[in-house]
Amino acid sequence: MTVTVLFAAGEALWPEYAPHLRAAFDEAGLDAALVTEAEPGAVDYIVYAPGSPLQDFTPYTRCRAVLNLWAGVERIVGNPTLTQPLCRMVDPGLTEGMVEYVTGHVLRHHLGMDRYIKGAPGWQQIVPPLARERVVAMLGLGELGLACARALKALSFAVEGWSRSGKTGLDIPAHHGEAGLEALLRRAEIVVTLLPRTAETENLLDARRLAWLPQGAVIVNPGRGALIDDDALLAALDSGALGHATLDVFRIEPLPEDHPFRHHPGVTVTPHIAADTRASSAARVVAENIRRGETGEPLLHRVDLTRGY
Image 1 (cartoon, rainbow, N blue to C red):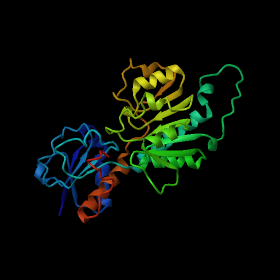
Image 2: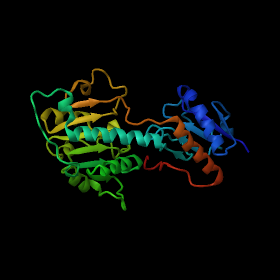
Image 3: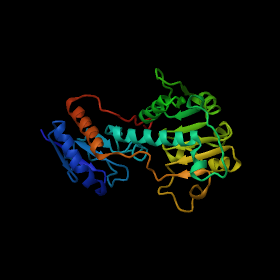
């Protein structure tokens, strides 16, 4: 029986994704019709992206899963009409891109490369410590956080992680709770934030917690803009308590030209490029979840709607 897959991720993405999705369906042996319009009652799966015109899921009574093309689900998870299973995107290409971004910027700050890139005067032979002597805090131990933590560990950094729920059985030291966060931040010279945005994580790094960091610590945030209190971050940079912040995500995107981050000497702004979903590999994840839905197997990367991720 042919399953109907509604592509509701926006017109702009259709030319990019359509051929890859159809190829992935064929590769998975799926008899699937990929469409951009259909009667709601005839739709079996929805391929989705936040910002889609589709906001009312109530008529989609036959839909067995909503398959998000983004890793972040905060813009859909609170939709009260969404009763269907929701799966976020964990794309191998996205993960690789995030690992490259995080590793590159952690190494940049660890080695103090900015002073040379910007043309430090004189002959300043400032030798950095070895990676094993540098504590890196990974805030967030999901798929992306763990992948980045392991890459940094492979370079001998002293990586320790923190998560809200607490993780056990990992190959890096893991902390949780307020006490665990404080203990880790008080020792961390580089902090990477890869947590989801929830009510509990918004403004996680506020003035009080930023003050726990050692003098001159660096923050790399490719996770969510709302994880850090903007005003508190700027104050910590202005006072010299923080050494630098490399930010890839923001509360408003694109970041307004007159935003203080744009012109602050202690801030590096990158335009949300740390990791992106690759259509070729993401299509295989979508196809695999449809195959699982049709065979009764558990869906991959299913979101807990009560927790928000």
